[in-house]
Image (cartoon, rainbow, N blue to C red; front, top):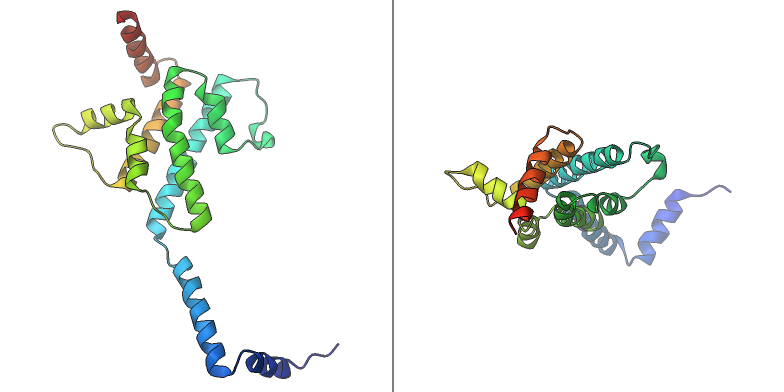
Length: 188
């Protein structure tokens, strides 16, 4: 079939109500497309980096807890499934999982609406992980830690990465946290 593209273009313009109407329609659609393209790439990158960073350490933790697990990549577990598997390992992973789930929710929202946003509610959810908030506050003294939502998200990701990486190391920070939790349990 031999198509006359010039005739096709003329007919499309005609069906659209003329050149001016078609141009306005196309400009409106281009504006919507451009709006979706012109997102805050810095925020998007920071959210994705935090999520990928935490997922790396969640996976590392899974392998450490279960040395005979096999090829975890072949299992094609979702991030949420990985969190479910590690959260029952200890009180520490259980506590961290609430914030990790919130980080996953933030990343999923990004995937669905292309907007890199960390809300005040997201920040408060991450700060509700009490060991994170307390350590963050203590490390910032005599100052105070940043209140910026994205900074809190990144600080949380680094905190989780460090804590999960430590769980695999017997002489780690995680063991010190575990010791403190055990000491507190023994006092009650």
